[in-house]
Image: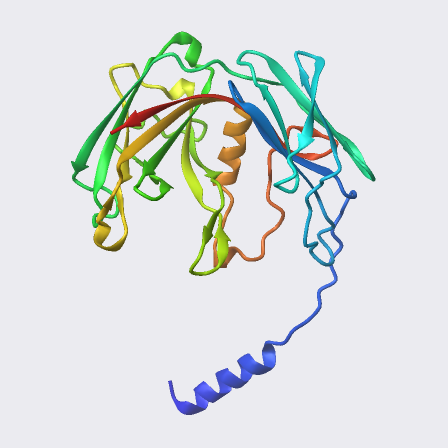
Length: 314
């Protein structure tokens, strides 16, 4: 490129790129409650309550709702009222244990906001039989520099399981930390690749304070979700490769790996499937509104259920 052409292009870029205000008419039906919670069998219930805000104008510093009344219904009757945690803004908790097989829904009201009510969600029963095997130091398949293990899971394939949905979460336990194993499914054994068969999701973990940057980090774990219609026969396992070392030169090895296998409600599977398809990255900075699944009437968010068991793999 000669100097004259370069100067012409540079001048064109500088003159043509200037800031402009865009007038946009974005429909907005007013502030509404946003609910997010998991009804986990044999655990207490914790619900996050926030609210929407107008997409045009300034972004509010805080959208948590801390003065709501949260009522949990069980099998069609009022069960209990959740209390504000006091420690975490926008969170409401209960000490009562969620029962597998029971049906629940929540109704939430707050001053100046319309009352929101979730759909009825039935808590599944625990998966019956699972066998998990950890094979140490296999030939790496993903990121060949890191030590990797193979986790093999055998699930009983019963007729009653075909209409259910499953989640698999693998975690590494190190001497001073617990991290997601960031599993990768082995390409030779996923029983089906149809759109409705399986997907990947993320699950937030507890915030961690980093003294170096003097700020909280918000780690996430990778979760594999699968429809029961895609389960292989009991003799054929599901296989996942997991990275089992961290630190400089990967000298910090995982002391153990845990496999959490759960039965989840269809709402969560469908939600994760949609979220996994959302485009991300710097080449998608400006996009039309993206779809999001909700089962909350007169509001937004998701209330789903699960029944889980955790197996330790040393």
